[in-house]
Image 1 (cartoon, rainbow, N blue to C red):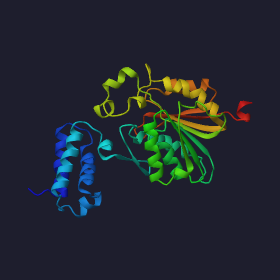
Image 2 (spheres, rainbow, N blue to C red):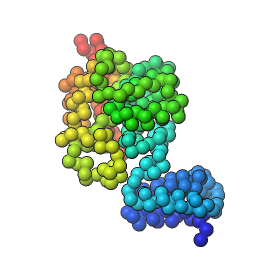
Image 3 (cartoon, helix red, strand yellow):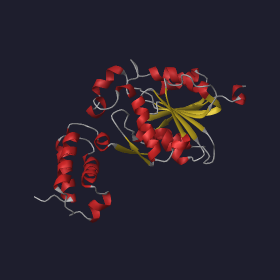
Image 4 (cartoon, rainbow, N blue to C red):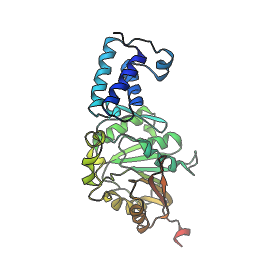
Length: 289
C-alpha cells in the first residue's frame, strides 16, 4: 500500500495514541516531516505526495523509538526554543516552553542597544543565553557548565546561530573563579527535582535526560543554596537575576535570595499559571542606603 503524507500522519497519530502517549498529533507531524523531508505546509498543500521506501522505513524507526518513550527532541536531534532552533543531545536538558519565562523576564527593560554582560549558569544547550543574545545584538554572554559534553552542544548551537563572536563558554562549577560585580544579568535553570522524585518522572525525562541536570538533592534546593549568594556576588550593583524553579519552590527560593541580600525579589508564573521564575536585583548604593 502506497503511503502518502496525509496517510503517514494519520497512521502515525493512531500508533502514538494507541501507545498512550501525550501530544500524539504534534509528535506524529514532527516525525513525519523529518522522515519524509517535508514541511507542515507540504502536508496541507501536497497531502498525497508519496513517501519513498527509505522514508517509510525511517518513519517506522522514528515511531518505534517514540513508542519506547524516547523524546522527539532526541530522535530528531533538535528542538525549537523561543525564536531559535537548537541542536539537542542526551548530554543536555531538552529546552522546554516553561523555560522561555526566564527569557521573557530577562528581556524586560533590557534596551536593544545595551552592551550588557550576561552570565548563564548551567548553560546546557545554550537555550536561555542564545535566545537572549539573538534578541539583543549589543550584549555579550558567558555560559558556564560542569559538563564538557554540554558545552560542546552549546558551542555548536552558537555557531549555527552566528553568535560565536559574542559568547564565551567555560567549564566550571557554577561561579567558581569568576570575579565579583561583573555581570548585568545572571540567568540559570539549575537542577531542582528532589532526588527521590526522579524515579517517578515520565520515562522521557527519567531515562533520557542527564541526571546531572535534574537532581537538586534531597529537597531539590541544593543548587539555589549555592547560587543565591554567588549570583549576588557576581552581579553589578543594580544587576538583575532570573532563575527557574519547581512549581512548589517559590517561598523557599525567594527566602534564599532575600537572605543573600537581593531586593525586589518576585516570582513570575509561566503560561500554565504555575510559579516558574524567581527574579530580583542586587542592591545599588541607593537601595543599600
